[in-house]
Image 1 (tube, one colour):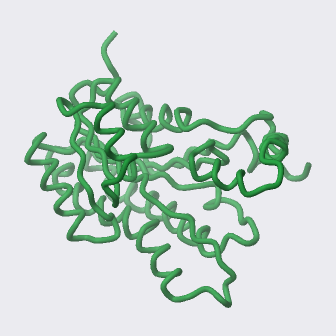
Image 2 (spheres, rainbow, N blue to C red):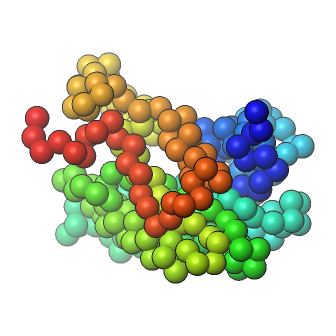
Length: 257
């Protein structure tokens, strides 16, 4: 059976931990050449480089909020692999603050990474995709882009905007062979959520409570998001664009408990 991304070139931003790491691993297993990325060249980046090897992978340190760094990332990708077929905009950060005490720096950094970072990457790869008449961009959004959770401002604002960016670019380039979609994960057991759970007096009890809020009665796993990214990146999804897929165990569809 042929691999689903055989010899395609994929950039996965924010890919040394969590969802991004799961995407990078799966894409490599499915035959892609994978560019992994982080704004830090740290132990997590080193561990993933060692795991994935260098034959079909390239690590580029770059902060997606910096347009110049993004251009370097794409230039290095082109120099190594010759093109970009798939972009997974996974890099992001949580900024949760009281609206009236939030600093200008918190607001700016949230949008610089969670929205402008995705646009910086898309703008850098779109010319090549348009020239070839093919390409897939997948933005990792959030359930915060669909529902508002108190105490999480301004993160939902940025994620709502990312969904708007997805739809707008998806329609803009639909007739030119480039598909743009997004995925909105719910509670996924990433390192950051593990760390959040550890702040409770009884982390196991809180984890169980969070799972009980979901119709499926369990929390999500990074690989489940990765498989959806794989589908959207592949030719199997060739008639899908400007669309968001929720991966939240049904949580956002509940009217009440």
